[in-house]
Image 1 (cartoon, rainbow, N blue to C red):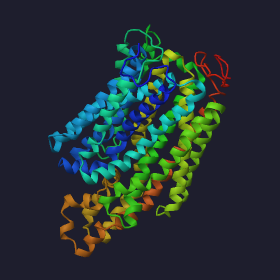
Image 2: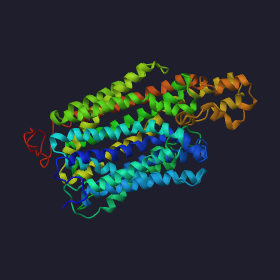
Image 3: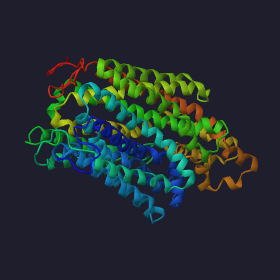
Image 4: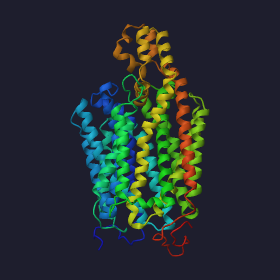
Amino acid sequence: MASRTALFTKDHPRYRWVALSNTTLGVLMATINSSIVIISLPAIFKGIGLNPLEPGNVSYLLWILMGYMLVTAVFVVTFGRLGDIYGRVKIYNIGFIVFTAGSIALALDPYSAGAGAMWLIVWRVVQGVGGAMLFANSTAILTDAFPVNKRGFALGINQVAAIAGSFIGLIVGGLLAVVDWRAVFFVSVPIGIIGTIWSYKSLHEVGTSTKSSVDWPGNITFAVGLTAVLAGITYGIQPYGGMTMGWLNPWVLAAIIGGLALLVVFVMIELRVANPMFNMHLFKIRAFTSGIFAGLLAAIGRGGLQFMLIIWLQGIWLPLHGYSYEDTPLWAGIYLLPITIGFLIAGPLSGALSDRFGARAFATTGLLLNAATFLALLVIPVNFEYWEFALITGLSGIGSGLFSSPNRTAIMNSVPANQRGSASGMAGAALNAGSSLSIGVFFSLMIAGLSSSLPGAMTAGLSQNGVPANIAAQIGQTPPVGSLFAAFLGYNPIESLLGPTGVLGSLSAQNSATLTGQTFFPELLSGPFHDGLVLVFVVAAAMSVIAAVMSITRGSRYVHVEEAVPEKGASVPQPSTRSV
């Protein structure tokens, strides 16, 4: 019997819209927090009194940046399966509580320096656990609440929130960081409290659940294996020994190889246990498999695009156009608005149209459009006219919107009702793992591109402006990741590199002003950066094309036999176990 405090019963015609609005709020909050610290990291580190660019502090930087996304990617499948067993709404509601508790703790960090950073890392992990609960069950709740012929629109709105939130977080983080770094975390608290109360009072269990035991071996091997792989790839971008990157670091190799081995063990376990954490037989469904792997590749490309554009804007374009390094994080978020606008336009529209025409045409077109925009970004100059940049990035947002909403709808339509939590979790894992992988993959590609030309350009430029030859050579041989992180964080890169040497104080006022001004580093970086960008965006375009091929192979519209329950007067495909 429904609770007397419920706003609507589960059979009420407006219940589906209550479910849509609540789950969209939850996903939006979770994804905003996945990116909100990217722009506000300088203010956060200044607030706790820690220099993130010192060699001993780079791990703090990586974990504050990556911990949330990594934990969300690791646990989203587990919580999806727990939703199938114990109730999707129950796990979703707990997620709101955990997320809100983490937000409160982050805003009240009582420590400074390393201890303050560790506090933030631990509670970002807790926040990520709550985010995983929200991610894993939001699309399953919507799939339960909406009939087939309305589901694409609903999941389209949800996916718009999921992906647009990552770009909105850049702007919100920049605005709040100017006020106070604690506000970056505290902003989620009132939203979390309202969402927790609202979801508890309004959401009902309307889906099919499967009472079974928890697959602990599967959960443990998946969590440890995926954590090891993602952590290893993240640490691979750090210098090791005399090398610019750490891919040959024994610990990195052990993490990646050991993690992959555990994931193989996970697959073997899932094929043998009676009640698996994830039913591997779902991969026999072509629409599901194509959607998952296309989604993973699209997420890697989208995450790489986001980080490369931030570095491009903050390290080169904004300083050349008169913005101070300290102000570049906020303005980078603002100048990336065309991506969000394009996504907001295309996401709901393509989701609604996919209800009628299926996902294949929209998803494939979106991926090919994304591939074209990656290549178009290589055509414009590094110091571009903004209208060119806005047009290309806006089209990229449209491409992502055309793909994401229909693709998620196709995934959820293709699975049995009692596997929706697991399917939602796997789709969420692909999205979040792709975002995590993108940093390691594309930073490595960019560093590889920079390594051939930046050291020489840096050494020559410093020497021409009065820096002693030995110091200039030393700075020139510094791994490019330091310059990238400095630009990424809104620090003055040359000041960060030369400051510890004490050379700036011995230079003439003119040379010092030139080196730390707003044009020296951007002009120095422009050529090498474009070399790296060619490698990055060609690989990203290739990923999008491969994902498009996978999308085409999904077949025509497929709806699982349990799904075809049309509303009165609606025309939907007849129940079938094959594409229709």
